[in-house]
Image (cartoon, rainbow, N blue to C red; front, side, top):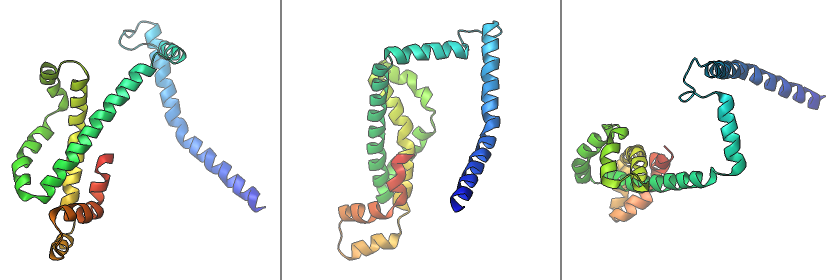
Length: 196
Protein backbone atom coordinates (compact mmCIF):
# COMPACT_ATOMS: atom_id res chain seq x y z
CA UNK A 1 0.00 0.00 0.00
CA UNK A 2 2.81 2.39 0.90
CA UNK A 3 4.67 1.56 -2.33
CA UNK A 4 1.57 2.25 -4.40
CA UNK A 5 1.03 5.59 -2.66
CA UNK A 6 4.65 6.56 -3.33
CA UNK A 7 4.31 5.68 -7.03
CA UNK A 8 1.12 7.72 -7.34
CA UNK A 9 2.73 10.74 -5.72
CA UNK A 10 5.75 10.37 -8.03
CA UNK A 11 3.51 10.17 -11.11
CA UNK A 12 1.53 13.17 -9.85
CA UNK A 13 4.74 15.17 -9.31
CA UNK A 14 5.98 14.29 -12.82
CA UNK A 15 2.64 15.28 -14.32
CA UNK A 16 2.72 18.61 -12.49
CA UNK A 17 6.26 19.26 -13.67
CA UNK A 18 5.33 18.41 -17.25
CA UNK A 19 2.35 20.77 -17.00
CA UNK A 20 4.69 23.55 -15.80
CA UNK A 21 7.13 22.99 -18.67
CA UNK A 22 4.49 22.59 -21.38
CA UNK A 23 3.81 26.32 -22.02
CA UNK A 24 7.51 27.02 -22.53
CA UNK A 25 7.89 24.09 -24.93
CA UNK A 26 4.78 25.21 -26.82
CA UNK A 27 6.21 28.71 -27.18
CA UNK A 28 9.53 27.36 -28.53
CA UNK A 29 7.68 25.09 -30.98
CA UNK A 30 5.50 28.01 -32.14
CA UNK A 31 8.53 30.25 -32.68
CA UNK A 32 10.35 27.54 -34.62
CA UNK A 33 7.26 26.99 -36.77
CA UNK A 34 6.95 30.72 -37.47
CA UNK A 35 10.64 30.88 -38.39
CA UNK A 36 10.30 27.85 -40.68
CA UNK A 37 7.29 29.31 -42.51
CA UNK A 38 8.87 32.78 -42.73
CA UNK A 39 12.11 31.43 -44.13
CA UNK A 40 10.46 29.07 -46.62
CA UNK A 41 8.12 31.79 -47.96
CA UNK A 42 10.91 34.36 -48.30
CA UNK A 43 9.51 36.74 -45.65
CA UNK A 44 12.93 36.81 -43.98
CA UNK A 45 16.36 36.51 -45.53
CA UNK A 46 17.28 32.81 -45.35
CA UNK A 47 20.98 33.72 -45.24
CA UNK A 48 20.39 35.63 -42.01
CA UNK A 49 17.65 33.46 -40.47
CA UNK A 50 17.71 30.00 -42.07
CA UNK A 51 14.87 27.57 -41.62
CA UNK A 52 15.21 25.29 -38.58
CA UNK A 53 14.94 22.27 -40.86
CA UNK A 54 17.97 23.50 -42.86
CA UNK A 55 19.92 24.04 -39.63
CA UNK A 56 19.03 20.53 -38.45
CA UNK A 57 20.16 19.04 -41.78
CA UNK A 58 23.55 20.80 -41.60
CA UNK A 59 23.93 19.82 -37.94
CA UNK A 60 23.19 16.19 -38.78
CA UNK A 61 25.78 16.26 -41.58
CA UNK A 62 28.39 17.70 -39.22
CA UNK A 63 27.66 15.05 -36.60
CA UNK A 64 27.62 12.23 -39.14
CA UNK A 65 30.93 13.18 -40.78
CA UNK A 66 32.70 14.15 -37.56
CA UNK A 67 33.93 17.44 -39.03
CA UNK A 68 33.09 19.26 -35.81
CA UNK A 69 35.60 17.42 -33.59
CA UNK A 70 38.78 19.28 -34.58
CA UNK A 71 37.34 22.82 -34.32
CA UNK A 72 35.55 21.92 -31.08
CA UNK A 73 38.77 20.57 -29.57
CA UNK A 74 40.67 23.69 -30.63
CA UNK A 75 37.98 25.96 -29.16
CA UNK A 76 37.87 24.08 -25.86
CA UNK A 77 41.68 24.15 -25.62
CA UNK A 78 41.70 27.91 -26.25
CA UNK A 79 39.01 28.38 -23.62
CA UNK A 80 40.94 26.24 -21.13
CA UNK A 81 44.17 28.19 -21.65
CA UNK A 82 42.47 31.57 -21.43
CA UNK A 83 40.46 30.68 -18.33
CA UNK A 84 43.51 29.18 -16.63
CA UNK A 85 45.48 32.34 -17.36
CA UNK A 86 42.63 34.48 -16.02
CA UNK A 87 42.40 32.40 -12.82
CA UNK A 88 46.15 32.52 -12.16
CA UNK A 89 46.39 36.27 -12.76
CA UNK A 90 43.09 37.08 -11.05
CA UNK A 91 43.83 35.11 -7.91
CA UNK A 92 47.43 36.38 -7.68
CA UNK A 93 46.44 40.02 -8.18
CA UNK A 94 43.40 39.67 -5.91
CA UNK A 95 45.47 38.24 -3.07
CA UNK A 96 48.16 40.91 -3.50
CA UNK A 97 45.60 43.73 -3.65
CA UNK A 98 43.54 42.37 -0.80
CA UNK A 99 46.38 41.74 1.63
CA UNK A 100 48.87 44.50 0.82
CA UNK A 101 47.37 48.01 1.02
CA UNK A 102 50.14 49.64 -1.11
CA UNK A 103 49.43 47.16 -3.93
CA UNK A 104 45.72 47.95 -3.68
CA UNK A 105 46.42 51.69 -3.88
CA UNK A 106 48.74 51.14 -6.85
CA UNK A 107 46.59 48.77 -8.93
CA UNK A 108 43.00 49.70 -8.00
CA UNK A 109 42.69 52.68 -10.40
CA UNK A 110 43.99 50.65 -13.34
CA UNK A 111 41.72 47.71 -12.48
CA UNK A 112 38.66 49.96 -12.25
CA UNK A 113 39.45 51.64 -15.58
CA UNK A 114 40.12 48.39 -17.43
CA UNK A 115 37.18 46.58 -15.83
CA UNK A 116 34.63 49.06 -17.15
CA UNK A 117 35.85 48.93 -20.75
CA UNK A 118 33.60 46.68 -22.85
CA UNK A 119 35.76 43.82 -24.06
CA UNK A 120 34.58 43.95 -27.73
CA UNK A 121 36.10 47.43 -27.95
CA UNK A 122 39.51 45.87 -27.30
CA UNK A 123 39.29 43.55 -30.31
CA UNK A 124 40.70 45.99 -32.93
CA UNK A 125 43.78 46.98 -30.88
CA UNK A 126 44.40 43.35 -29.96
CA UNK A 127 44.08 42.37 -33.63
CA UNK A 128 46.79 44.90 -34.47
CA UNK A 129 49.04 43.76 -31.63
CA UNK A 130 48.45 40.00 -31.64
CA UNK A 131 47.04 39.23 -35.09
CA UNK A 132 43.96 37.10 -35.77
CA UNK A 133 45.24 33.83 -34.35
CA UNK A 134 44.92 32.04 -31.05
CA UNK A 135 46.82 34.63 -28.96
CA UNK A 136 44.15 37.26 -29.64
CA UNK A 137 41.34 34.84 -28.78
CA UNK A 138 43.11 33.80 -25.59
CA UNK A 139 43.67 37.44 -24.63
CA UNK A 140 40.00 38.40 -25.14
CA UNK A 141 38.63 35.44 -23.17
CA UNK A 142 41.23 35.90 -20.43
CA UNK A 143 40.36 39.57 -20.07
CA UNK A 144 36.66 38.77 -19.90
CA UNK A 145 37.21 36.17 -17.18
CA UNK A 146 39.95 38.02 -15.29
CA UNK A 147 37.93 40.71 -13.58
CA UNK A 148 35.22 38.56 -11.96
CA UNK A 149 37.93 36.27 -10.56
CA UNK A 150 40.04 39.22 -9.41
CA UNK A 151 37.14 41.06 -7.74
CA UNK A 152 35.88 37.92 -5.95
CA UNK A 153 39.38 37.10 -4.75
CA UNK A 154 39.95 40.67 -3.57
CA UNK A 155 36.65 40.71 -1.69
CA UNK A 156 37.37 37.27 -0.26
CA UNK A 157 40.77 38.30 1.10
CA UNK A 158 39.35 41.50 2.54
CA UNK A 159 36.43 39.56 4.04
CA UNK A 160 38.63 37.46 6.32
CA UNK A 161 38.24 38.56 9.93
CA UNK A 162 41.14 40.81 10.92
CA UNK A 163 41.34 39.11 14.32
CA UNK A 164 42.37 35.87 12.61
CA UNK A 165 45.22 37.63 10.80
CA UNK A 166 46.25 39.47 13.98
CA UNK A 167 46.21 36.22 15.95
CA UNK A 168 48.43 34.55 13.36
CA UNK A 169 50.86 37.48 13.57
CA UNK A 170 50.84 37.26 17.37
CA UNK A 171 51.86 33.61 17.14
CA UNK A 172 54.78 34.54 14.92
CA UNK A 173 53.40 33.46 11.56
CA UNK A 174 54.99 35.06 8.52
CA UNK A 175 53.23 36.58 5.53
CA UNK A 176 53.26 33.37 3.50
CA UNK A 177 51.79 31.39 6.43
CA UNK A 178 49.07 34.00 6.90
CA UNK A 179 48.23 33.95 3.19
CA UNK A 180 48.10 30.17 2.84
CA UNK A 181 46.92 29.02 6.27
CA UNK A 182 44.56 31.79 7.34
CA UNK A 183 43.31 33.67 4.30
CA UNK A 184 43.10 30.71 1.92
CA UNK A 185 41.27 28.50 4.41
CA UNK A 186 38.92 31.11 5.88
CA UNK A 187 37.88 32.91 2.74
CA UNK A 188 34.84 31.33 1.12
CA UNK A 189 34.81 33.82 -1.76
CA UNK A 190 38.47 33.13 -2.48
CA UNK A 191 37.76 29.43 -2.69
CA UNK A 192 34.85 29.99 -5.09
CA UNK A 193 36.32 32.86 -7.13
CA UNK A 194 37.28 30.60 -10.03
CA UNK A 195 33.67 29.39 -10.41
CA UNK A 196 32.29 32.77 -11.51
